[in-house]
Image 1 (cartoon, one colour):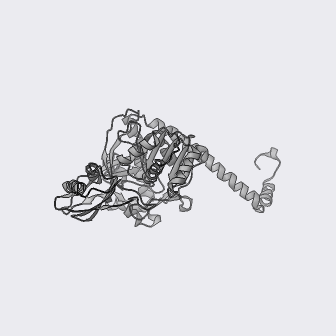
Image 2 (cartoon, helix red, strand yellow):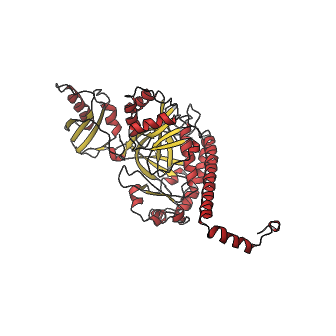
Image 3 (spheres, one colour):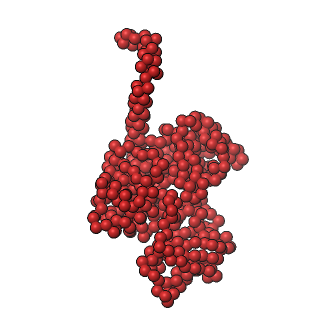
Length: 451
C-alpha cells in the first residue's frame, strides 16, 4: 500500500486479507507454516553467527576474556536487580549496592542461589519482568537429584545455547552438517535433520539403537553414560561390526574410567565428555588432550567454593540468560579447579581439573566429615573381581556394597575381606560392611547412573 506502482489502496489490501486469509483456513495454515519456517531459518542463522564468534573466542588471551566477562557481568547484575524480584530481595537482604558490583571479587559478595531456593519461588518472582512469560520457552531439569526445576528461556538465548553445544561438540571433531546420532530425552526438542543430527529416546532398547546406528551410519554418537554403556554391552555380543565412528560424546552422567575404556574398545574411537546443565547449557568439555574440561569462559563464570569438609562445590553464573538469570548458582556438583594456561589444543579457556560427582552423593560421617564419592571409587578400583559396584550408606557406620561380577565369588571370603578393608580405610575401622551380589545395577529410566 506504500508503493503507488502496485496500484492497491490500503482498503483493497484489507479486503484481500479478509477474503483470502481470514476466511480461508488452508491459506491461513500455509501462512503459519511459512512463518514457522522463516523463524527456523533465522534461528539457524543466529546460531551459526554465535558459533563462529564462540570458536574465535577459544583463542582469546586472558585480558580479552576478562574484558568480555566484565562487559557482560555488570549489566547482568543490574538487570537482575531491576527486573527480577527474587534477586532484588536477596541483594537488599545482603545489603548490596549493585552499582558497586563490577569485579569477580565483588561478585563473591552476592548470596549463592540453589535449585531449592528457586523452586520455592512463584514463577513471577524468578522471571524478569522485561519478558512476557507466554513468549518464553519452558524446559525442565532431569530431576535426578530431586524435583525437576522449570527453566524459562527467552528466544534470543536459544540460538546461543545451541551454539554453545556445537562448540563443545567441535572439540570431539564434530562439525555442523556431519551425521550424529543423539540418545536423548524424548521431551527434548529435535534439532533439524538438515544439520545431520538424528535423535532416539534414551528409553529405546539397545537392539533398536543398534539398528539406528547401522542404518544412519553416523560420524559421532552422543548420549548419556547409561544408555551408551548398555549399547556397548549389546554391541559386544553382535557378530556384525558396528559403524566406523569418529568419536563418542557422553553427557548427563559422570563418566567413570571403566565405561570410558569399554566404549573405546567396543567402538574403536576416542571418547569425550561434555559437562552441561539444562539451566545454563554446555558449561565445559573435554578436548583431544583429555587434560581437564574447558570452561566456556566467554559465557559462564565458574567459582570453586570450599565446603566445611574440604571439598569444593561448583558455583556458576550464566552471563547471557536474561529471562531467568542464574547468578552464583550452586549446581550441586563437586569439582576441582584445573589449569589456567593454554591447552595443547589451542584453547585458552581455564579448565575444571576434575568433576567429583554430586554433593548429595557424599558420604557423611558421624563427626561431620564428608567423603567425596571419588575417594571411594578410586580405592575400590583395586577389587578387580567387581565388574561394577554400588556403595550404599545405611547409617553413619553402616554400609552395603552391591556388586556385579562375571562369576560367583570364591567361598574363602578373600574378595569380601579386601573390599571391606578398602572401604573401612576410608570411612573408619568401626564401620559395618555387608556385600550383596546383583545381576544388574542399572537404575530404571530416567534415573542417572551416578558416581
